[in-house]
Image 1 (spheres, rainbow, N blue to C red):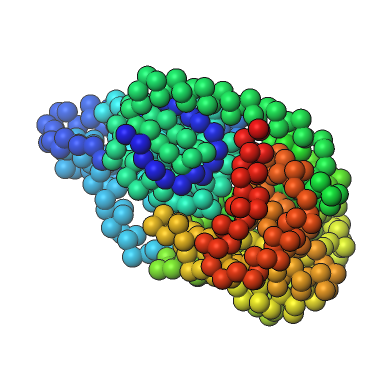
Image 2 (cartoon, rainbow, N blue to C red; image 1 turned 45 degrees about the horizontal axis):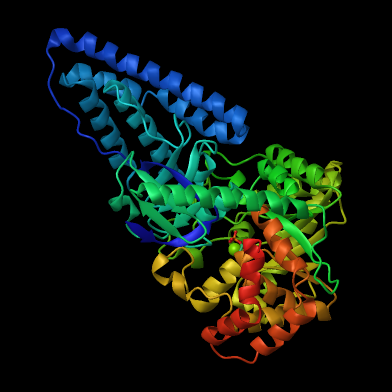
Length: 581
Ligand code: PEP
Ligand code: MG
């Protein structure tokens, strides 16, 4: 059976299915005799002890393999195991109601949920998820069943899930996950972005892959074509094993380009930088020949935890990146929580339409304390390399002015306190909301650079939810409106002598990227694993040719026409280049 979805991250994975879902297993409810109470409490305590040991082991492994921050999630799990609300209450209930430990624990947990049901903040929800996780672990240990999670996998598997949240991907054991396949999501959902960052083949938006596979059965994830093959035949496996080999050989061949410039045939040099989500990705970026970091998505520092990152912790992370990337520059984007990046210790309310809601700079301008802490950390870290600041989701001039004013305040505060920092920091904005793209001439006077966030720009301009697979086919980077907006932004920027980059996924789209070049974009920032491929395309086209294409495209009226035109002019050639032919 072949399922079609959205290709999210290239490569081929062949392996056993691991379905990630909340387990809903049967619990036997029974009463116990008075003389059995002590034995039952002992059984419960043993399960709690066993859970503690398991969490400690996981925590240690995550700390060693991934980092302190990710390990801290499991510290909060350990704290829950000490929490009288869950543990003592369960013991009390076993004693009082003379029921088995499973029943008592479940009742306590249910009461707990009931009590906090009315408070719907992300923080409380995250606490719930943590408590639920811990309660599930104790139940598994009571029943002597292994627990499912992506952070402590025993064997190599392919993850199949309805959706993967950024926190799932962040805590995932990267060595054991061969690939993933999900029911929902589009190319620019954050799970897809994380898959590319981690170099894991992935297909998203498969609609019902979770219903079509069984745990332990074999599947093939074809991340290039967006296909998943369920229960493949022997010859299909052979065929894909060969493709996998070819893919890996192709990747290896691309390595030859590592130290060559990203220069078109006719000599235009493009700055080719990487998008990262944390210090741990810098090495992959550098290994792939990135000339700096064009987008550091700092929100990942705020996720998967129950408290906000301190100024010191942020400073350390930013400093590490600045030092590693120097002498090249790193653009640190301030917190862009919201949209599909939910999990955070921030009290973000539940919204019907989160992508249109309280996210990006809007949130920072209201939670000024949090914003200032981040700005302080960035300004201090800027002494250790070449750091630039970028504000996300700007939609008006007032927002830029207000953010810049707060930045000035922070500088003054640091000065007054005698804390050393870098004063001459460049400040830019993401152009990812149509209103910002339209008033680019006004905004260009206030900032040092623009970076086109095409993921959101396309979503907001075309009214296409970027994570909804039902409308994924309407997500058109080459839509005439998008091209005209980008043209407007580039011209406005160049008139004010500031540079324009592109850090959305369009920058690594084989058909979209040459058009960005033709429209005059100066810098491209792409997933670390796409750098060499993008460089290969750049080195095989001429700027003049892309400019001609762009000029013609601006006269067309539908995305069908624009796509066809690009396809005819360079599409086939680019595909050949990418295939290594
Ligand atoms: C974008 O919107 O294009 C972008 C790069 O930002 P993010 O994907 O993090 O929203
Ligand atoms: Mg964005």
